[in-house]
Amino acid sequence: MLAFIARRLGVMVATMLALTFVVFTLVNLEPNLRKLALEQNNNRMSSEAVDIWLDANGYRRPLIVRYGEWLGNTLTGEMGRSTRFRKPVVDILPERLGYTGILAFWVMITMVPGALIIGVLAGMREGSKTDRSLSILSIATTATPEYVSGIIFTVIFASWLGLLKGVAKAGDISFENFTLPVMTMSLYGMGYIARMTRASMAEVMTSQYIRTARLKGLSFGAIVVKHALRNALIAPFTVIMLQFPWLLTGVVIVEKLFNYKGFGWVLVEAADNNDIDLLLACSIVSVAVVIVTQLISDVGYAYLNPRIRVR
Image 1: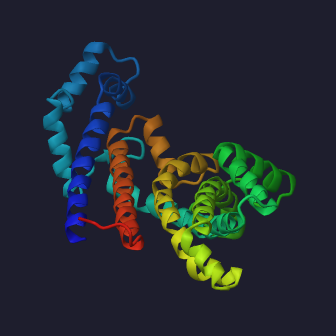
Image 2: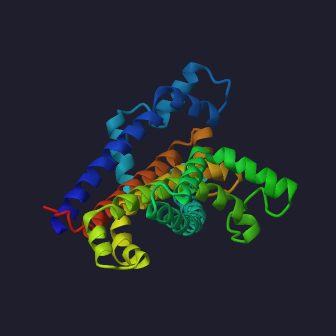
């Protein structure tokens, strides 16, 4: 297992280096650099003035040299200065990530138990009315994008009924403030996990050892709880872990929709204003979350599934 984790860590480091270099190259393309020069100075600058400014600020140096300097500075905790917020990036991201972390926590607390319950109930009796009803519900929630469901919930619960806030204030974890963004993200992700759990549960319920348990005279509840449930949750575990990277993309839409000023909101602001240093820092966070959760998913799956032997 230790050798497996070591190999995965090596792949993680190589992947992170490759992805950050790709992102660094894209954000430093000539159109982006010229746009940055115009935004930081005068939109009526001539092409010659733009070239002079870019050369004076080091943007004309070889790309690989600038990437190496940026990578070295990042490893020491120096991520540059945001041109949008006019302060160091390290003073921006921790607070915004904390806000998004709180939102993601409540989304997972709401989404995962609900999805597992729906999936297990549907898969216990494949083909029944309960299975068909819950499956249709799961497909409907997954097929509805966050920006659609978010607008619908805002119109119903904020505009018509006046029960909840249509704008979520960062740091306020009250029921009125948090319910709409949490509900919007939870329902979208819940359907996917529920469908995977349902498929896994249905497969387990038709396996040989379940038939043997039935022949022994065990009750249906005992078969589900003692024999089927643990094996049925192995596959959904991987899906659940992959929801963490999805949360980073999901919050971009939801945070902008509800003006919740977390990580997703900052990412959109950085992209809109061509804030190169902040964009690069956000990319590092995104890549790290994806790679770490994938590692946890692989290790957890190998641990939970006794049929998997790590070599």
